[in-house]
Amino acid sequence: MTGHRQLEDRLRAWRSFRGVARATRTLAASQALRWGEHVTRAEAHRAWCAELRRAYAPAEVTGPTVDVLVAIGSDHGLCGPLNRLVAEALAAALAAKPELVIVVGSRVSGYLDLGAAVRLPAPSSVPQTREVSTRIEGLIAAKGPLDRARVSIVSPTSVRPDGAVTVTSYDIEGVPAKVELPPAFAARSPVELSPRELAWPQVSALFLHAALIEALCRAGRCEAEARWRTMSRAHDAAERRIEEHSLHLRRLRQEGTTQEMLEARQGQGMRWGARRGASG
Image 1 (cartoon, rainbow, N blue to C red):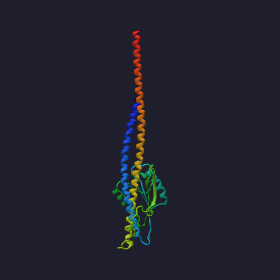
Image 2: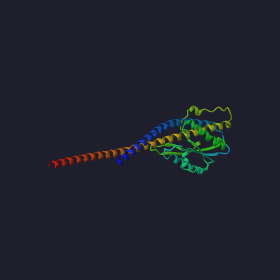
Image 3: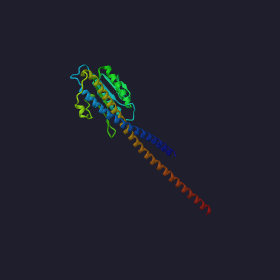
Image 4: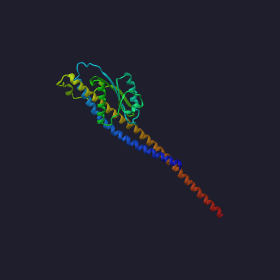
């Protein structure tokens, strides 16, 4: 009976865990789809801002630059090695000694001593993404003009079907546009209602905001995809353990039933033998 109770307790625990894994997996899948839509829009917006910035670029940009490094992780777990990989890529990028380091997501701090880095919460919605982006822009503006900041980003960019997370370090200036703009827009020359040196800072700020929004949305999608795949594996593992324990429990019950039948038959045979002995 003790073995039966232990197996039944384990079965209840694994079934409870399977329910949690199933719910978390479903939620993560819906979040990944939603973030995927945001990434598509963010990529198109950044491509548009990049073309606008190119059109208004002055002949020469002079003045000091500010080196900024932004690393994007997560505030929540259950997303595999995502934050560890971000921390490893961040550690390599810190060798360039940027003037300002901003880390989005508290989980990265558990893998790396960030020192004087500025820590911000990871956004969980588009409004929060805009808020975090605005805060990053404010931190950069405190160091120098936005149009003279050299911003590099370390963030997850994709998740393979096997759950492996790809973390990329890149300069926002070198990101090619994945969205093809209408030829009419690309060929159209801007109407200069003000000198370029006056329009350039605003256009650069708009491009920086779009690049940060895109990076934050992509990181949110990767986090949701990684959590979905992690919990899918956990759900499948729970299914296997439940099947193993259920099979073992059925065998124990069958053995117990067989033993009871044998004991009952043996007891019946002893009674018959006793009666025959008494009658003889």
